[in-house]
Image (cartoon, rainbow, N blue to C red):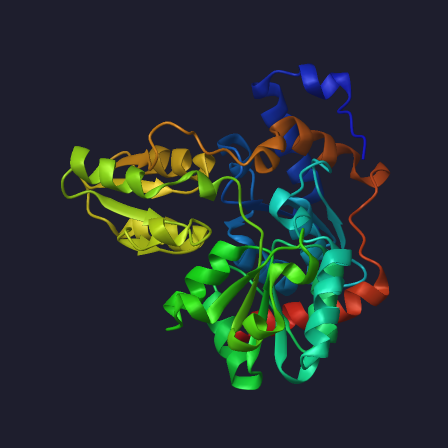
Length: 359
């Protein structure tokens, strides 16, 4: 996909851009809703009518039937989910259409369908429940809906596992292996109960016997931001700052999660930081824009990035600028909205509505 922001918007100074965004918001009034993810730039978050993690924003998108236009400052799969959950008369726009998700791209539909063909020979729908992380294409959400499964976010992965195991013998979880593994451990499973499906190998690199023994089949996907964090980062921070609190996202490897004081979604991390007393030192293992924003708003606490050096940026979340938002708000009538095909939308909505129900 090619997208070039017009020169006028690229060259306008920040103060003037802000005035234009405020003016556009005022013109649109109650017809428009701007949703901003926690990982967005500070100057973009400033204009959000709501800020949250992917679960919270999906819930808001589903509930706000009073608006006509939803501007989603996030990445493509989030805007797709908003379109799936919104009403036919509502239109969803992604200010920067190039904002994707490398993790979501690790689960190609053809590869997932190929894996499911193998699992069908071992029981399919009767034994396996597919659970897709929110970070996935609309077609894979529809696949889960068709096969009795659901979507989860890092906010409700525990509840999704509970839902799955109450109904099926095994789970097929994709695309993030670390969230899947960490949730399994939290759920009381053993490492041996989970196997990794390597989509680059025949049969996922697994024997039928390994799949039979496993309770969860985990896709070999990951978040390039959260896999930056290592156990040695936790150890170094504790040595440097005695009494430090460490909170990490569950997309981090298990070796990091088990050493942290707390683990949870971006929404959880925000609340965790808010709950710490003034003077606290908190190291956070997640995307840098959220860390910087928390440090900005909680100047009474020392808030630092866990690795101390890697500067974990989600380049796709960072793509959306106030320049993009201004252009989108002023020209949305000429921009193609996010549109999920009706057949896909029908089954994807089933999986997403299950997600909203089980939280």
